[in-house]
Image (cartoon, rainbow, N blue to C red; front, side):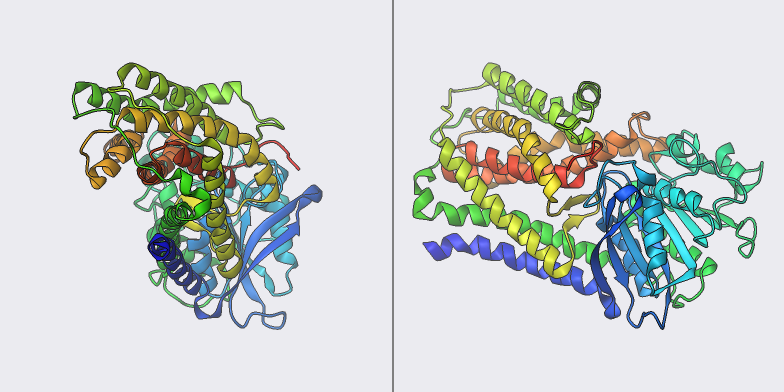
Length: 568
């Protein structure tokens, strides 16, 4: 029995190991070394980064270098596609956690987003050719490198803005002479075209007066055409890959344009064509590790449930709420799936107004998500009381459920720590990423754990006591619960991005950030439904799944968000 209970656990760590090794070998391809570093920025700020060093680089054999910076509510690992390809071509790369993100001191937006301090650090490395330094930033990371360029105008040679812009709201206005040798890589379906270049549709960015002023023309900018002169530092080029704003991170086209620009404007790189890219395999590796992590949590729970200490939690659901899927069930399903989406922008807006960043709640977006979650948990709970079928008693051992949840997530956390320590990776795909918490983030998480626990207790109680159907197969039960939590976001995102594809902008044109944030909800809700259903089927209680998901989701969100209020 014990061996059977351990099978899923073993499968989980084997999947993690396969993914971690694949990611590790890709990002260290050809002898690249990766160092997890901390250094002092401006005003005593401690900044974090990953330093990619190509083989053979030393104080006697200096290399060109690139400062690569992620966007808002991302981290240094988000730039790994860019960093891997730059390092493969011989550049020393500093992938920065900008201020208030990842492991860099907060608050966000402080000290030029950390850009000036990071550029000074990069220039201070004895392995760097200081005459050949490039700057690359995505979204808010663009404003980070522009802050560095404004502070030290002679400390770099060229700059790439990926999905970003000069000028308002957070950068110095661009001119035909500043910044030096500028490439603007702005995707045809970028959600932030209004914010960045004052045009409703990203396809129209070439007609933006703001962009034209930077290029020194009053005509439409021609994509792919070089304006100005590289030798004089006044060169400009616009490139428009076929992707979205967050899609730049997983676009060979977007990454390739930046490779080409640095090859043209910096000396000392390897002549490797931009079409030769391997970073996607690293992304696949960390995706495999993320899938393995979910399997590991399920396997850990099952193994613990087989131990004598948690034997009292083993049980099976005794009764279903519905004998069949009638009108009442479908109404409850629709409310569960679509009310959270219909209230998404509204409750996020209320959360922003009512819960500004403070010492107690220092992460603005985490506060918004928590506010939205609690209100929707209450709605689902109340609707469940009205629409439930046969009465199903909400059983559960609270103390035992808390202990097994702590043990399950704690063991999963150890594997994430090990992957970070041994392989310098987190568990991610694209914008979905799970990484260890810093000490400051761990303190923050303790506060946000309270509202997220309330949400999951209310929401999963409603799910498992209000939408269970007698006679459902295992597959049908899993799919039904995943649909109840994730279907609304699938429809929402399909509608928004379908509109973007055909109209050139999101339907909710004023909500680009919150729309991009919603992309993470789709896989996250799927994972939540899977873990909750898995634990419910083995205990007959919604509580173990509620506590496991509360711990996991709080960790996931807090580790990936920006901290807007200084916390020590």
